[in-house]
Image 1 (cartoon, rainbow, N blue to C red):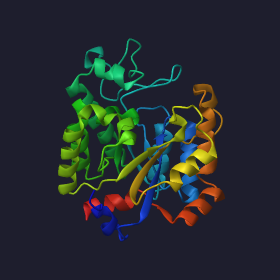
Image 2: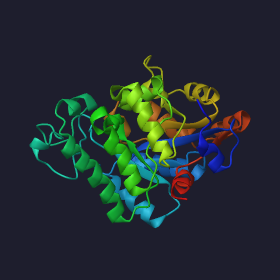
Image 3: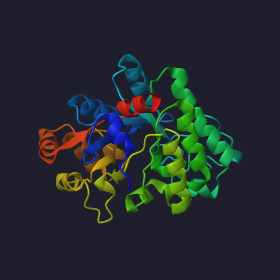
Amino acid sequence: MSTNPLLEKLGYPADARLVILHADDVGMCHGANVAFLDCFAAGMLKTGSVMLPCPWSQEILQRSLADPSLDLGVHLTLNSEYMGYRWGPLSTRDVASGLIDGQGYFWHRPHMLLEHLNVEAATREMQAQVAYAQEAGMDFTHIDAHMGAAQSAPLFEAYIELGFAAQVPVLLCRQMDDYVHMLGVASVGESRYLEAVASAEARGMPLVDTFRITPGYDATGEGGQQRFYEKVLRELPSGVTYFSLHPNAPGEIEVLTPKAHWHTLEHRYFQSQDLRDLLDAEGIIPIGYREICAVMRS
């Protein structure tokens, strides 16, 4: 694969190892907001994205308005995965939209959404979430997708166009590998995906080279241990890697999921001296989306 032009535009050599340590699911609950703010203040996790339909999004939205240094994007949300804590669309509560289940909330999982998908309604909801951020005055720096739903085949082009319309990068990788499949884009098909990615980059969309995700999703169930995160980081290739994390402060998260231990481990580790020492030893440079967004707008 060719060298990512984003490296040169950011002022780095072709063999640099840049990592976007990214807090997904900000706004999902109070603990997610606390974790993002704590890790952001420590200076290595430099960016995150907000689930605007969630009840605690208002808290982090108000913080972002009060502190323009916060680097936050829109985490397009079309699913509500927890059993006892739910949220739904901003644009409609009409069952005919295909966006909601019999209880009036987003479907739990992307495959359930896709079984009922109304492309026009889902696109309107994605647009509504971006518009909500804009109208609130949020200076968001990027767009990505909760559980990959907005990147599924029927919505893929609309997802990309949202970024161009808002003049912010969307999360897209320059290659399709096993990790990228976890984004939910496998249904797009490799040839269609790569063609769309090449077109987006040619139009000025900054892209990342590789994607990694929280080891809590490890199929062995052994995630949530510091050594797993360190292994992922040590093995990062050159280029720009987006590392999807889900830190959460202790408290609510233990009620929501049996995997709470890896959420709270991420809260501790991604503001720790251990992490700082590892990044320094490996020559890995953490970056955020604000500088990438500036490249797109230049």
